Image (cartoon, rainbow, N blue to C red):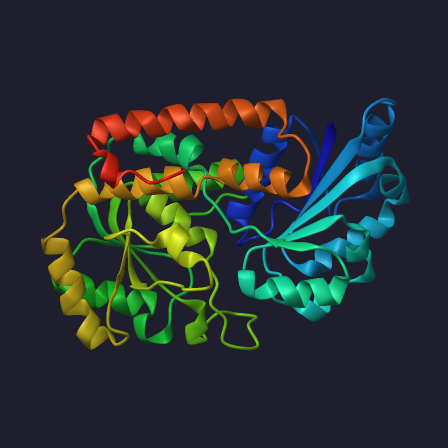
Length: 347
């Protein structure tokens, strides 16, 4: 099957999803088409698709929000050509943003179980739950293999609740003798950006984050628990997440091992002594455990496998090869960590 992976990479704050789109394109052996690009780019991609008269064609839309669906209206040829049409939507909780073009897709995948029924009612299409993931076997493994010392006690980046404002936390924590890094320099190119982020994460013992249901998240009109790629990237890189872990439906299967996420008090006065104690008691073996659990539970390739199974189409050959490689890497980690059978995660 000949795949066209459509999306809008390059938007600030979406580097993990941008990288996911690149991974999906590689796993499909497909080509890309960029939303919000000039129409000729779409037309060039469509010319390539139409150039192969035999075989069923497929398009997978990687949407940041439901508004990305509207771009499909600019490519009517793609509507007629493709036999399999799927969409992955990161922030599907904006139900009223779904345009009529969403009805063109065979199946829509959303990242929260709580959104499945509402999106199905809005679009009239079958909707499935497909959580976010991380590139545990790829860029994370590459960064992890450098074995650099974890010299940063606490890494703070991304949105935080007001009580844990980044610079305030950093100043107070440094006053206690902790080594703190605030933010990570960003790169406009998705893969380069992910390398920079992961390169910083593998040097940190602890990260900081709080569930979006606490009300700080920009754009949420209601309390909303959402597991974002930032949490999974941190854990895959071995970093222990401090704060308040998101607990949407299904999160236990993705985060539910001991030591990966540690809740701390929601006030800085109470939380700082806890952070100081955890840094003092830090055991580097937890980093390897976090990485292993992420390989088994949260690698993007596992999500792609589930996507194709739900669509009822065979997994592309490149993805099959990557899944075999993932299984071998998992086995090597189990041997290195000397995990007894009882301590291993079921596939």
